[in-house]
Image 1: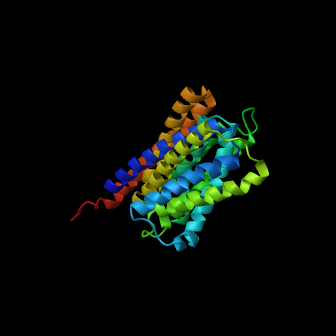
Image 2: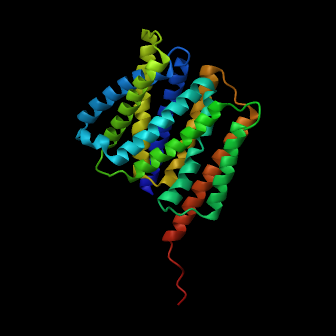
Image 3: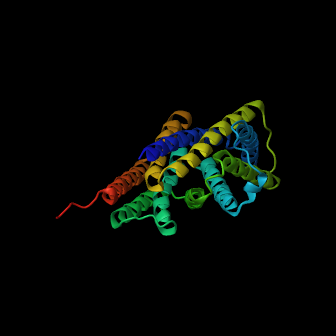
Length: 296
């Protein structure tokens, strides 16, 4: 139980870091292109992670970076990053973040399917209702529907691959080493994209924003890994919903965004089903450790 509570706290810290990072990245949209954003932010982040890994004694042989499971996790992160930042550049931060909140539900379902974690009929029903909430936000076939909503949904699937792989990584691989591999890969991907998008002028203000985004990104990377490794997926994952609060508050004050009723309704459905899923997980856990009554 203590590990789950600690994991949930780590997840909230991670979500705060990601929300601030996302808001800074969004503010760079239209100034820097996708490749520049990924490469410049990644250069700052990778350098800082390397220093931290050496400082805290978590640096290991570079051979760790090419382990199949590590590469699998990195691939998921790369796809998620490209899809989500592209969506973030082109839609309200609250909407993009709300769609991403399908991740805890998708993780619970995927953990049952691939890791054998038990999920009963009630939680399965909650997961399906939660995905209906995602459809309310995306609104396929309606005026508010855009391709960028689909990109945000693809990012959810990529994050599932990333987080499930994190769960099965060897425990002797330090969190900062995993974070370094992810940041380095995203940086190289950004550099590979630049020839296709060109280079926009970069001033001191943009560099300062990129550096700040890097710091908050590192906070998010590190604490989400710590959360997934220390706590049960079914318990820790719903605390990702904290990012929705952070994102909507930032969107309102920083970008003047006002989520419409459908977005709020869909978000409420997702959060409610996530909370119910968490509640049912705890009920099942208590039942599994409570001995049957003595009938003798």
